[in-house]
Image 1 (cartoon, rainbow, N blue to C red):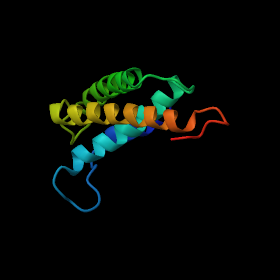
Image 2 (cartoon, one colour):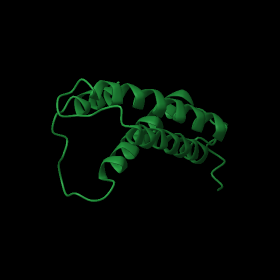
Image 3 (cartoon, rainbow, N blue to C red):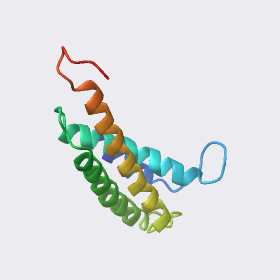
Image 4 (cartoon, one colour):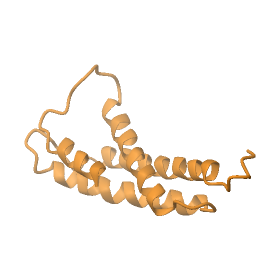
Length: 119
């Protein structure tokens, strides 16, 4: 819920440009933010051992695609923002995939029974 609230506030901001400029800064920001959201989402869904990688990644993809589409649509109503940018949406989806994959690795590594900590 907090992640979504912050996303809404960021998308409603008319002047999102801060910090140093470098190529693909916006796309990297989208990917990182959505990977964090998908990571939290996947952990919330699969907080038990034995989760299959395909399931975690698929839910991350779905999370990135749906939330990214809603975010891009929301930006069309914000003055100074363009919205409906397919490249931003692709970065959101990529972040969702990455977040689901990282969550799967996290669960695989840290959700083992107490006596089984072998790599």
